[in-house]
Amino acid sequence: MPRVDIHTHLLPAVDDGPESMDETVEMARIASADGTDVIHASPHQRDIMNNHSVEHLQNLIVEINGRLRSEAGPTQRVPRVILGMENHIEPELGEWFDKGIALPINGTKFILSEPPFTSYPPYMDKVLFDLQVRRLVPVIAHPERNSEFQKSPGKLRKLVESGMLVQITAGSLLGEFGSRAQKAAEFFLVHDLAHVAASDMHRSERVRVPQLSRAHQRAEELVGVERARMLFEDTPRNIIDGRDPVLSGSLPPLPSRRKWWWPFRGRTG
Ligand SMILES: [Fe+2]
Image (cartoon, rainbow, N blue to C red; front, side, top):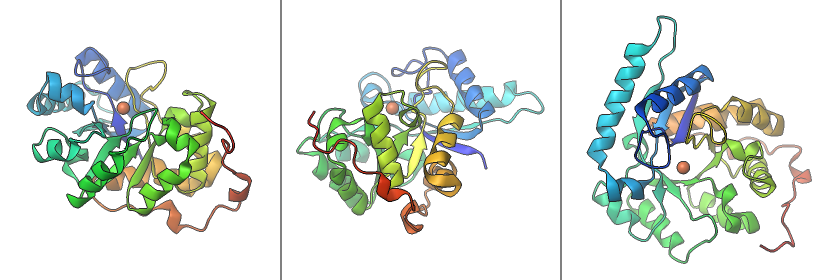
């Protein structure tokens, strides 16, 4: 089955993603050739709130899908682009959602929520709980890159046990963000604390590229074909369709799990 990418910076000139519509279309084609058939465009919420509008994003989505369809060759697969946002976890997030200036994934109950990279602010639990009160399901964006979750995976487990989902970034599995993020991503994966993998694509080349296939292979090596398929295909497809995913935690634990101890135990910083 093709893959679904739920975290991407694909839209042109709205955040730190591509600067032109041509690069946007090129990125979507690269993703499609690599086996992705749905791309969730998730620009940074704050950039849109401060400098653009949701209507501008909706117009871009129509334009991109139109170009991809009209410019595709007769045998080419055409990827579908859908809209949402990467929402920073800030005290006002619930209110921004109520006002329609923070968007969930493709109009579903799932909302991509990004913690800060270097802290676990005191308001974070309340903001996430406020989203759940609104019957939303937070999908925590790339916690393996956050130093607090690296130090204390128990904090992530608490969020998962309260019903949230976790998205890890494909490049983390490949070491693109350093060994700490890589080890954390592997640990989360092996311990069923990662539910979906996404590219977080920003540009057509170098890091955070539009391809998922290499990371998918790496996940297969780590946790086997079935869990890897959940991570790259089944769970993200359920999310964009608004269905509750079947989670890997419902499978028997991995036999190799015991050899994976928390790699940062006893380390500070
Ligand atoms: Fe992102």
